Image 1 (tube, rainbow, N blue to C red):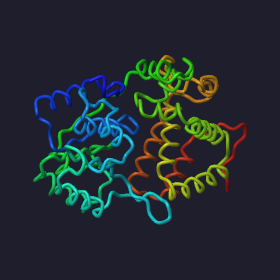
Image 2: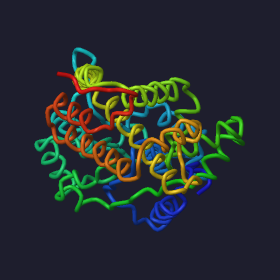
Image 3: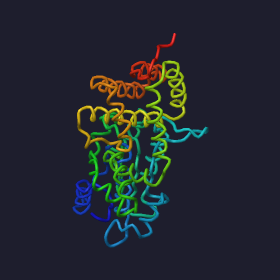
Image 4: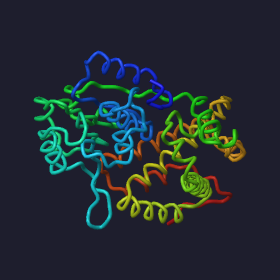
Length: 343
């Protein structure tokens, strides 16, 4: 189990290891958890274990393990949202992608013992793609394992879900994430503790943020923009909504991430209002949160959280981005000294 090297997923690793030991491995799994919780990492470890030639799989050092980790093993494929000719991610996993892996799965392993197909964001499969995959899941070829990952299990078609063993990854304990960042990666206790809190149990996110300063820089920009918005009038807000709507058309993920960070900030605001400071996530913004808590009531804080949650939901349901964001801006409290509604 220790060879799998996954933070906070001992129960799932034990289940998969026992299944392998008993020869009861299923042909298809559905791993569900929030983004950057280690779903793909778990799938990679499973692929390594199935193809490892070391004495204690997954050894991580044999040729198959290293090739799988590097993404160059011919029998292990990771399928996600494709990129179009303009360099933008498509919004669906296409039927062409699924047909390609269906064809590959019909052939015996080329260099290893088992073919493994990892389909990321399985909830984004088009209807045609899901139906094409379904045919293969109903009559799985030998020596083939499919692993589907998703952060929105309810959006994966039931016909597909019902043919997979469903495994929900646990939130990694904050202490385990912090200890890993500090002891294994060498970060300061302060930085490790902050990242562990911000990760909200997503070990993968914490590791990415620890290695890339741009992650926290983007977060700071987003939270500072939120504070500025609360102090600004409707002219500023509508202009911001227009800019964000344009960005949403180019990168939905960036806007979803921004809304999640605003939501986390406002959740902390509500916790401070309720005197539950130990559970605050954005501890590096504690001073700003405490100042804001004196200007925003508990009911108002709850209302902001609801507005942010609704906006994200509307965007996911393909509502007009500009309209959804303008409605959000109208619903945020006006905290400026003498702000007046435009027009």
